[in-house]
Amino acid sequence: MEVQGRIKVIGETQSFGSNGFRKREIVVTTEEQYPQHIMVEFVQDKTDLLNSYKVGQQVKININLRGREWVNPQGETKYFNSIQGWRIEVLQAQAGGDNLPPVPPADAFEPAGDLNEDDHDDLPF
Image (cartoon, rainbow, N blue to C red; front, side, top):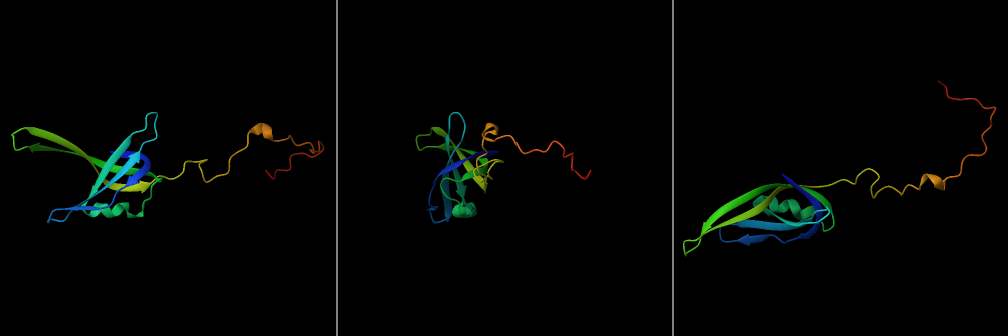
């Protein structure tokens, strides 16, 4: 599975307990009719994958959905879900994207008026 969107927040790496568990969270805003702010967590050695990314970048994150069961001290069972990322990459600009100059409309050009009617097709084939 994957999530695509623009990076909104990149959290700091958090460490928990004496076992060295590490977690880092990123929030990606999807670009659809009703944008969603999706929090994805990267754990253990995957936390380092976020080091080279910045807020505002368009990314694709490969994810796994995780679920777990927990029984509280009163004996009630609770269920929790998380979204764990395991790969992230920058999305390239689409063709005609931000790196290209804007294309003027076709009616912004004047028709060529210096055509010589006597010239015939000069293509070599």
